[in-house]
Length: 576
Image 1 (tube, one colour):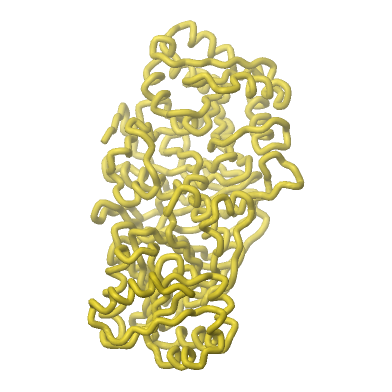
Image 2 (cartoon, one colour):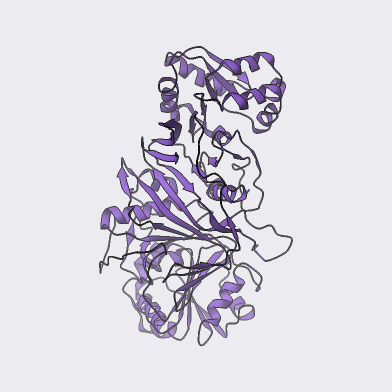
């Protein structure tokens, strides 16, 4: 692990705002990364115009560690499209050059210093304690504009992920906050006290990574920091009064520990009862001094803010058998009688269902009957009778389209009725966990579905009538944006109270206890639950190039929700 500190400050956050930032005369343009486009209508156009307008001499220096493939593109467009008077590329790739007086003097001629992407460890190790760092600090102090995109963003906050040992993935942080790749430091730049920044936030599913960083700092430094994650092709300009304005296609995501809450350790992971989450869209502003947010035009509030069903429900985030053995054991032994007959519903192919059946037989349960919940069985009288007699139902490897058709027939109607009856136990494996909620996000495993505005939805079984569920959250990097954004998008679209993220390393069990309902978490990774009691909100409207024939990303913004991470065998109250 790496911790480097020069000054230890304890920051007290006494309100729900993201934190108190000391007054500075400089300005910041924080950019989450992604491809820039020319013109004033593109996602970055207004943000780059803002940066130039905030400067005195309208001269822009672009700082990088490596020569880009097209070094003149940004410099040319800053002049032709965004109002700059002069621009220059600075490739600073050695400590000798970074610490040269000529480098300092040249940089100080420009009032906008734009730090490009790449590898933040190159910046951290090469520019730290050099005249390049001093130029950035001095320019900021005299009122200049400091911009950073991607790796350039990561180095601007007080605490920064240095990437000394390489990239760290969100699932790695969720399983082990102290893994070898989490390298944080606070001895460089520090233009935003009390914060840690992360980029490519939704695109790379980094919400759990940011939480891991926050937990790490709490456990190792006994200090609370606020997390600010910028989506790619999204920016936030922070003026001299510490008011931030959002630009672009996604959100500025602010994660802050609520009053009276703190991260706690369990096994190698971490948990927290609730923390504040804000997702601010283009046009939204936030006053970092007071926490005041403006820009949202719609308020939504769920009619029912709790789950009330007197049922037993188990749902996992993994499809494969070996990740579901604890769930199966609990399914057999904790609910009803271990000798109860189990009705196993699956798709047209029974390969996976047979594997689960074999495992259940090892647990010495009662009879296990497998049926296809497909269109050909919509009116199957025998299956309808089995459903009526079953108190334990297991769902494995359903086909969305076939199961949707099945539910339209008499057997499907009987199933929908039966699973809602008091005391009935239903278990959903991996991908099928989506069906337990109010909304099924259908094509979340399709690469780019959220980015291209192509996510599709259907009604679920409503066992949790105020909830949407995503399994396999970090199954592969191609779907990170889908799994990160689909939960809050569905909650706002359908005015739901809860969203649940599951991974291949956990499952939950929902049941009633003394007229109250709880969700219990099991596994190596915490179950993540986001809750809305009502919030100001909106949908992303800005497209990449600002063209009418382009579709916005399926990203929502909101003023306030709470996020809880529930550790192994702990519980979360979902109803009175």
